[in-house]
Image 1 (cartoon, protein in one colour):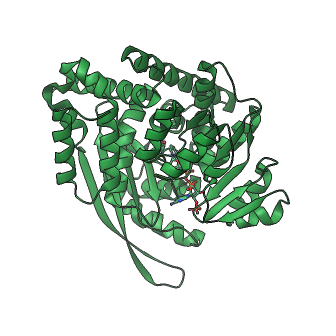
Image 2 (cartoon, protein in one colour):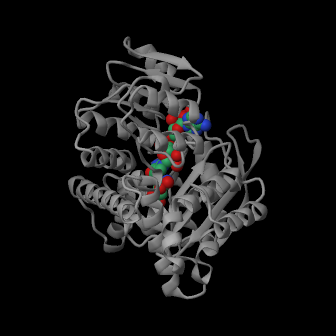
Length: 447
Ligand code: NDP
Ligand code: 2IT
């Protein structure tokens, strides 16, 4: 598929006006391409500069973050928060702390969030933020001082009706707790609904830590269900070993699949016996150690430095680490090994060439916008609980998460059918998300 001339001109303008933001360009191109069947059929989607507006962030904050390490040395990092769209609700999306974070990274993630958040149907606008702060090897006290300094600037942009951050790579309950503490101190308000992914005692929702990984597996289960099969007895390749990967592995096991891989930025573990969650938890969450420690503890496991998990024969693949981690060569290897479906737990983990390989081979590809929407959906549940001063049970939250993932799956499938691209989840997700946000923007007038 290619772009029609108006979309191609818009894409050229996006590249020209946002130089050196390759990930943002990639995300925009993918959406413009995926929604072609809709804009061809319905010219009103081009009215009122809807496409142009959806590609232009409403606001972007860039700021300096100064903090001191345990030895008293001063460090300077850069902080970001992009409010991309508030058409459907307050800006909503995570914060990423990783040394590679640039404005382009944050913009691509905020852009993806527009369509993802629209798909949840839960009244969420879209934003993303973060910093090039590298938490690896930093003490709790250093992370806390960084978070406090970061929030000292960020707080003026936030609020339960304005912008509600959560976690992403390098930001979990510990960081959200420190960020919330500083927010509370600065504003003199216990405004729990300003941040989600909080520790339970501070108003965090049950099942929020599990939600992205569980939701990705619920979505994958629905994809397989639509094809007349299920997860039971299947072998799964999973990448990453952080929040999303861990809970995807847990849910895969619970539903009868055998996840045999996980990975980090330095290599992969292959454990034909199935990843041992207790060991993985001990290594990654308790000791914050590297995956080499997993292979040292588990005799059936092998650690391969510098490798991704995609050469391992599997029935389903779940990239749950980071963007562009699954390339054309990996997609060809998975296809050759007979993979049935791919579900993106991470944001934009498949390169455009990999997406093309899966498409041409007719392999179901569940895009991150849909498959990993369970995290932000459960953040919306957290906001709901905070506003009502309620606390739902784990089972109730998980039930609503599953219901949301099933509804998103149905929306993707029926939208793809309606646009004569049956079974194309990439198109279905982008079109359904775009149509919703476009309708909201039209209703709001030219703002
Ligand atoms: P974590 O920080 O908990 O884990 C990230 C994992 O990815 C780690 O295993 C990390 O390894 C690995 N990783 C990071 N960078 C690279 C890289 N360049 N190459 C290979 N592996 C890498 O983050 P999450 O699990 O929360 O996030 C994972 C993905 O899921 C991201 O794409 C995120 O945007 C997406 N996501 C997260 C949601 C959430 O609720 N947390 C919601 C929806 C999507 P290492 O330790 O070596 O860095
Ligand atoms: O990519 C994502 O959807 C997230 N990191 C979660 C966002 C959120 O606000 O919960």
